[in-house]
Length: 156
Image (cartoon, rainbow, N blue to C red; front, side):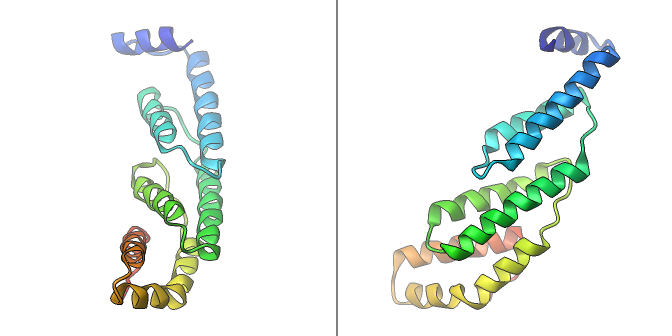
């Protein structure tokens, strides 16, 4: 019923309650699926969030927040186990940058703790390599510092 809903919305008419309830169910479900994937599709998430704003639907804030928290914790744990994976680093950084655009907060305490663990263990090794001229290590440091900023963590 998307075309009639859009038409009514553009005319400034109220959307029938049954259409609104359907949109609420579908958008919550779509966002739940998008946030639970191990490889988050940021464009899809942005599109769903845009639709949520357009239709002014109510979200399952606690459920969605918890789901994204779990996904981020899995991703950060994977980064801790494979810190040299720069692609995974970039994906995690892009997701953390997107957090401020979401219509719900996400508890990042475990992600921050994992990051802090990397700061005390892996960071020193990469910093030493970067000081010796290793370009890959310098890129890693840049990504690490950027991720720290997104997580409100201070490095160095």
